[in-house]
Amino acid sequence: MTDSPASLEVLRDRAGAALMHTYARQPLAIESGHGVWVRDDRGRELIDLVGGLAVNVLGHAHPAVTAALTAQAGRLIHSSNLYFTAPQVELAERLIASAFPGRVFLCNSGAEANEGAIKLARKWGRRHRSGATGVVALEGGFHGRTMGALAATAQPRYREPFEPLLAGFEHVAADIEAIDAAVTDDVAAVLLEPIQGETGVIPVADSLLREVRALCDRRGLLMIVDEVQTGMGRTGRWWAHQHAGIVPDVMTVAKGLGGGVPIGAVIAAPRADVLEPGDHGSTFGGGPLASAVACAVMRTIDEDGLVERAGRIGEYLRESLLSLGAEGVPVASIRGRGLMLGVVLDEPIAARTARAALDCRVMINAIGDSVLRLLPALIITEAEIDEGMRRLVEAVAIARTEGGA
Image 1 (cartoon, one colour):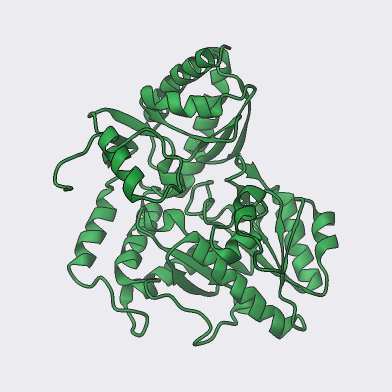
Image 2: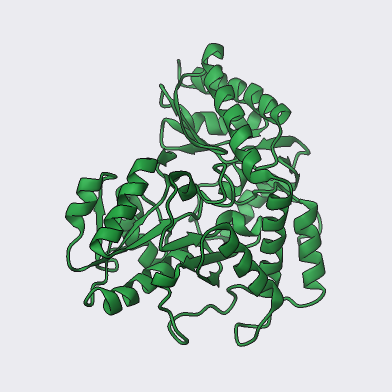
């Protein structure tokens, strides 16, 4: 049944019958990939500027990922967390070295990481804040689709079908006075993303991150930073909060950590490290296969200088996007940092542009009517960016024609 490639039409029909209708999939069937390129069912090669939504930090079929997968699969795939494995310990050590002193809980996704951080904050609040369990989160934030992470997410379109959600969350504007006003005796932590990806790549100012850090110190709270999408070198530092020169109490990680293999993590500084045996767990979290791959990803990013490179080539991408205005692309502004950029358009053609882009053999992501999100692999070259921009110009022209512009 799966021995030979299936066409887009066949896959669409089979998926419609076999898969829950939880995704508005784009009309593209991907068969293989290499670097920042993918090949579809028709043999066309497309430039991937979506990067698996910030997951494929090393691109597709990177030799380091393939080698780690193959070698570890031949030794040990799963053992459970009843026992020690070297890849798990090494990964925790690498995460700590890249971030801040503390200890690590390994899981399988960003949502799981945020669930773990919420549980940690509740126990910490009971122990250190006279029983406080509340969390202040930012409007526009996105922290996952499981029930606790969803409660922390402030966007009604994600929340409303599943209410009532977990209580104890207050959503406020990205403003220090609003955050301060929301901190009552019932609040244990402040949770935020350095850049809000799902609402259009909206950065939280470095100055606000510093103010939140100072507020948490002054009011005796935990500062939790969600680096699920912003981490792994994407913004030109290992972790986006490092641009602000702060250290959070808790950080959540996922997406790019495994280079395509599902894995997530919670890092807790000594002040926040309150979980004990029996408090939390994960059958597959930090298994030897995923941990070995994540170690290979972190090692490759480090050895190849991809963190610094992401900042440098991200500026090239930003300038390239800004220059598209001279070629008829209605660019109003560029938001974001490094290789996490949002193109804000003057016209509501983002969705049409993303669809047209597939015909022009480039993959981009539309957020709402007027924002295009780009999250390419950290290995993308200037030549590949140039070609991607050429194809994007073609896509915008088609989208504008379809819309009567």
